Length: 286
Image 1 (tube, helix red, strand yellow):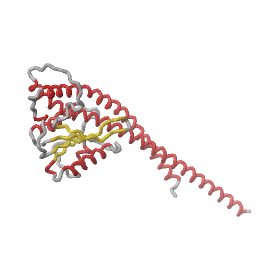
Image 2: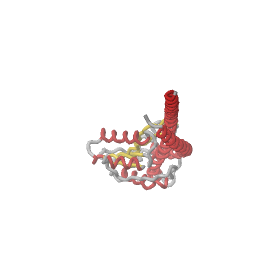
Image 3: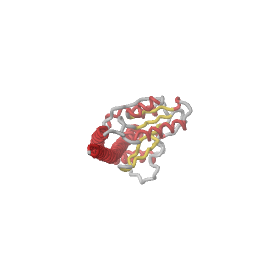
Image 4: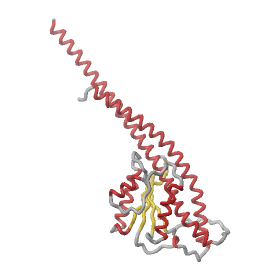
């Protein structure tokens, strides 16, 4: 049985851990609120640029941009969004497991695909599992600006435009609520489902012409999809970390209660033993 000092030390160390996890929960909650606002405020921009692209594609039968056309699949690219740090519950493991299972099911050779991980956890996973990495980025801010990922988004889109990959997928955690995040796979390129919901499209006048506008706006739209998914993923990351730290705090409280009970029982047993020894000694002297 552990001594009173050992139990007391465990109570003190668990209490210190509880303070840390509680503080991390509050920090993550604050970051989650900000990240959720960023993700939601970016939605109107994405919807509008999607509407413009869909309007051009639907209103002009002569549109024949490579990013709108499917071609035979020889090589596939996967952009996967993870965090730079752990302690986020199943946030990283879920999306990385989904990615690994996907490439195992779809491809027989590593020559048939490349991975573009965003985040240190994803980068380390791909290296450990020996997945082919085309390019990666780490050290993103908790509230990332588009300029931080402009280079890698342009690189991913250029892979498709240069026909180094024939399709591009996006894997990330979609933010549903503070306690729910869904692993999501989105086909990024080619853009074959821009207006799949059949929404009523607005009529625009284009200057200089539709083709020139499309050549400029399509890469921007594809890049904005990656950035929007990153903002969505950041909200999911902070929500998952908040939930994980809350669970850790609750577990620490339960452990402290159990240790306190054990400490009191051990202390009571020691007192009882001392009283018994004193009474026995007194009786022996009579």
